[in-house]
Length: 512
Image 1 (cartoon, rainbow, N blue to C red):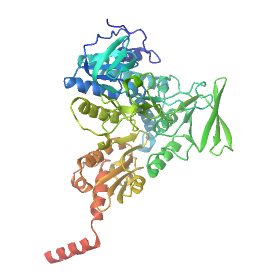
Image 2 (tube, rainbow, N blue to C red):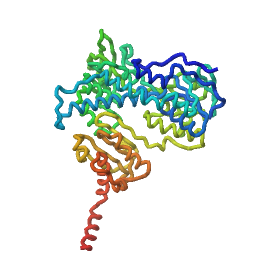
Image 3 (cartoon, helix red, strand yellow):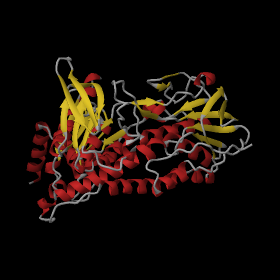
């Protein structure tokens, strides 16, 4: 018999927008359907990887079941990309108003800011977008949606809310969550993560951010622009350790201008509460120097942990570990060849767009004898600070470690007319080509809209298009993407060797 859902997941605060969100992605009156025999595909987890797998498979005629225990849409919709970008846009707007005098615009009395309204806008937009990930939409696509805890009971069976679903193929797409780093007193003090920070309704006067990776720097800049006194704590010696050092240096200067206090080389060793304050004890890497920082809130932006607990993976014959997640091969097959995995639960590059791409591989490989490989993916990413950092392919140090000689073509945004006109000249485009050729191996873009610009380079890499062809491509003037065209022109100039110049000179002399 169908099983009613008894436990309803609430988003906080439970206003009209979050009520709408919950009604769509975890409807309180939802009744699970009765299983319809053996499924071609059972998908466990309704984040990006799971939703794309379920929708794609159903669209191709497969009988599909989708199981989610929390909110459909996963991290991206509920506590990741969607709310964070809404918040970042508000911070951009506030920074633009405060900097309007540069453009001859005078705002008497300055910019008034209401954090509660900013967060209300976030919740409203998230609820609006949630229709795309809703139970209603997926049932209309022909997917049997089950809300509840999934547990594998065998190599081809999974239980949910007292029912057993049989499958020919399955996909584990349970994602990842904020890692609970073991700092004494941290969680007792009520530390925030990306899963809770978007529930705030009041701006914290003093905020400490632990971790200077993408989440840490994005939120540090946001809250500093809103008016919080922000301290960014990082145990290493700089921010965004994975990124190009020239790029990270530009972002560091931007954070400092926005008022973020950078505290490098200190490890948080303990936290305690005194009244309404949270007191952070930090020590130098050598453990010799200690200092205390008093704040109102703490945001942790360090690490992700795959969701593999309580899934019954042992019964399914699926190998995993709690740090790296589900073990998969290049075709996204687990140790049980009838079960694949996709997204953050099994892959080191934990991005929404990567989860989407992996889901497409799973559909082809699991259901249609495909041979798609994750090693064939060209994966770009972007950190949405201001200016943004976007990257694809190899860094210079990657090429050096692999023994690959490269030519690097760099164009500063200060040489691009549109960037100058918009007072956004800080940044660059840096493209690495295999030495002596125009074959693109990697690129980094630092610009206000770097995330929009990187796709041209990614497309070129995937399509085997070199810088020579990009140089022939007409780019509209004036745009910031002209920086990519200028890099391509720089490649063409590099081909103008003294011997070639001499030959061209002789041709011109002969033609006079």
